[in-house]
Length: 292
Ligand SMILES: Cc1cc2nc3c(=O)[nH]c(=O)nc-3n(C[C@H](O)[C@H](O)[C@H](O)COP(=O)(O)OP(=O)(O)OC[C@H]3O[C@@H](n4cnc5c(N)ncnc54)[C@H](O)[C@@H]3O)c2cc1C
Image (tube, rainbow, N blue to C red; front, side, top):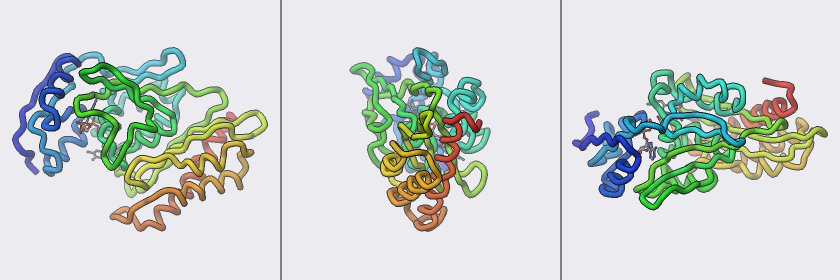
């Protein structure tokens, strides 16, 4: 449980951090909250020669709405998301995601940028960002670029981030009056990773028809995934109990869980069906103003 030897560098500006990343390439790792990187180093699953600690760079920890977009600095801690009134009242799905991550000690350190960059399919934010159609803003030596959440997660613990790029900001479109969203997670015990979880973000018009839906799934595939068949089963339909059940069954069929210490495949598939049904129902009720 002792990491291999490494150099610790603490840049005080973004340019300096990117320069260090470019200089050390695959030998370097960014350290944000350290809540995933440090355990991985202790287990020697990661052995970076250089750890670039970005905690001393000012201006990466913020959260505000601007022109219909919620902008969250990459170094914003989970505990800040949990405590934010903007998140609590405007983005319930994000509040519900942050508050079920690990425990308060971890949430005081862990960052939203680190959670996404780590791309663990068991992490909670990826499914929520897929459901919210978030954009991940990254910067490297050649400038800044925006990556849609749909294109960000490219494989098992892999992202579209280049080796010399750093996650800067997460942008989330503000919900409309007819939007409802939620995150529902089932875990073995408080503070654990999900056995499965479902993120739902949808819109329902005055006639009760679902006009848009995005559904993300946690820890039931190698790569954080959208439940596209479930989305297709909902959009254009009246949000009735049978339409919701059909969508939940579609999510169960299209996920790809592996048997592990959290349960066998059939159990996880059925859990997705149950969670998806409940999450869609809650999101519909929120869209219609009949639930908090
Ligand atoms: C006991 C425990 C329980 C946990 N339970 C959960 C859980 O239930 N749900 C959940 O979602 N997570 C859980 N986590 C993981 C936690 O949320 C991590 O903190 C998160 O995955 C990584 O965030 P971090 O800021 O700590 O990143 P770090 O550990 O600092 O970094 C993680 C990886 O991302 C890279 N990275 C970090 N920041 C950036 C950046 N800005 N740009 C580019 N690359 C970057 C690092 O180089 C590293 O490879 C748990 C962790 C612990 C220790």
